[in-house]
Length: 346
Image (cartoon, rainbow, N blue to C red; front, side, top):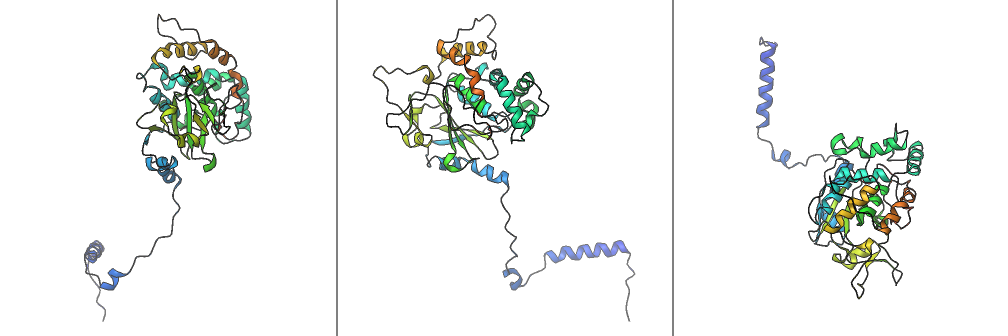
């Protein structure tokens, strides 16, 4: 005969729940304990995980021959990372200055955008080139300039224009710094990118590498596969000079430190940043409409060489822009800036 329980449904559910809890602590047989668990199928690493691993100090150091002097200063991923890295590096000389700020750098880049740059960006956007979605709704040169001024830290990364090769070249020329970039987005044979200020490079006597003054100030940057930039420090310096890097690191970017002349002088393009240069930079900024002088302070006139370069700045808007990546080398006379608006700095 079958015996049916007279317990109510809630009572039965509580009893089943209690039995399940007790089963968790029941002793298991040795065979059950020694049986290996079923291995989960191999899952591919997520893109963000790979990107994070490539940006670790050890990974960046490995790219540079495991040099123990290499370390990484991590920059906030807000859409302004390139400008924040430059601001941090330049501030190492005499502390932070208002014309190093991200907003001032963006004003400088916006002031150098020409109608040719605007037309090129429009064309690449029409061709659905990667990194030019920011051109949606931009119908004039002034509208493009206004969009470049938008800061990611204030309006979120996807609403600002990230620094591309064109922007990086403008900053390199204005502040006279050499940019050395490790670009994880390209194959290893092409990932070492340099953007030199005008007049900084000279052909080597051996023909193997471009020679620069050993006192040339430089900024080392790491660009991850997701286009985020961090600042690389060498021997604790955010703004080292070329002479601080060993020859094996210089060769990665195809450059070398030239021997000093008997007089120990160097060209204006290679001059390291110094306090007395601040007024000159401020004057340059005023000349191109980027930076306002302090109240009651008359801006200094730009030197002839820099003024001539400013007059020919429109040539910098052209070049290999379809890739959205920094150019391998910035040359005097323009034609080297990349037009990839989303392409280099997150």
